[in-house]
Length: 166
Image (cartoon, rainbow, N blue to C red; front, side, top):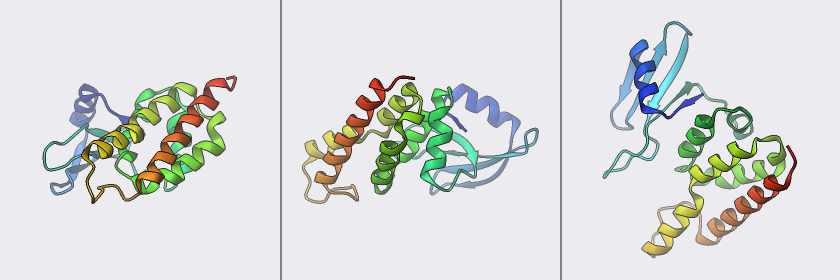
């Protein structure tokens, strides 16, 4: 579903045909003629200063959180967990739903994949940046208390998954 390795991205993009480009959002859509799949290349963490990591993923993606997590955290491919974590790291409005889903189904996911996903979701890292900036207007759509609670819940999920056999 996701490809994060730059060389693999270039190799796959060279086989595909570009359909459209959105320079405002820094997105490019492709069609792969051999597999007949649609792909999207984008920079989810792009801002005025830098683009951040580039992702290449299948298009369209499942519409709900549960299906996305099921695909990305049950397969052995670490790029799926990393890519989903990076993409959702900028969607703080979804974090509560994501954590709820993880709390309910953590034992279904591979331990390594879950760890990679939570690492690249960057809730703890964002919490530290917000605390260091100490701005009156937070850039996150959630409060600091909500963020603290989500970080705590994500740590509990990691510990629970660590002790679950399998």
